[in-house]
Length: 71
Image (tube, rainbow, N blue to C red):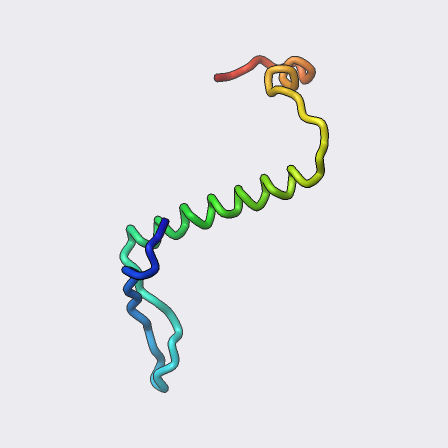
């Protein structure tokens, strides 16, 4: 998780001093993207779980679809 206490931003400002962008070290940018993707996955999982639909094992689904299992 990105520790916001140690997070140092470098802002880009326009002629009037308004913040219009930010520079981040690439490693922090990549970490933010990873965490955003994980958060989206969690939200999707929670949304699907709320449906309370019956689920089946992947192997059973693949057999029903007539496809070979690829591991």
